Structure formats: C-alpha cells, structure tokens
Image 1 (spheres, rainbow, N blue to C red):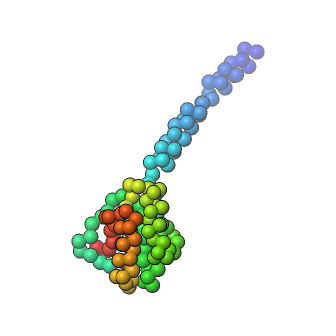
Image 2 (cartoon, rainbow, N blue to C red):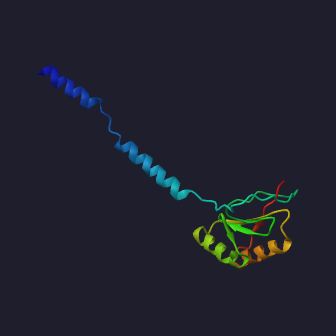
Image 3 (spheres, helix red, strand yellow):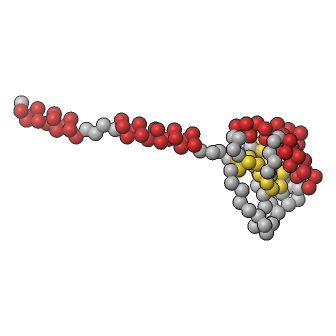
Length: 134
C-alpha cells in the first residue's frame, strides 16, 4: 500500500501545468495581431519606370496599380477611374496612418496617372507617391 501511495505522489509531481504558458502565448498572439499593419496589395505586377532619385516611403498601406492597358487595380480588384476616390477614402478610414503609393506601368498614359493622383488628392491624401525602380 505504501508503495502504491508513493507511485501516485510521483505521478502528481511529474505533471506540469501548461495553462500559464498557453495564456502567455495567446496574449502574445493577440498583441501581434492588434499591432500589425496590413498592406493592401494592388493585385497586378507593374513594370515601373526607373528613377535615380527614388526614396523609400514608410507607412504605405494602399497600393494603386495602373496596368499597361490603363486599368486601375486596388486591393486585387479592378476599379473604374470614377471609383478610385471612394475606394481610397474607404481604405484610409480603415487605416488612417497609411499612405498611398501609385504603381504606374511604363506603358500607361500620363493622363491616367494624373486622374488617379487627382482622385487621391480629392480623397484627402496630399503626399501620394509614385513607385519607381532604382
């Protein structure tokens, strides 16, 4: 009987309570999800023009792409030029700290780039950037 009781005590001491560790892991997961900033991708690959004075822009959360056929893509969806302002306003409302970068293809027209820039300014973004290659 004494041996059986000793075995039961050894089994109880050998168990490790994992609950505090799981609590810490879940709290860290929630912290990283809340603090993460999500970049809205444009949805297409663009051949950007080259520029020798290119600089990196921080806090970019919205990418607007203009394809070689003057199609506008925001958040992996094709968007009409008249809906660019509304889409940017909606995305800025989701992330007010983010900026806008326009990725215009080499073969897209300057007219379409200016229409997108005007729509971005009308949405309240004064410092929209145009993406280039170094």
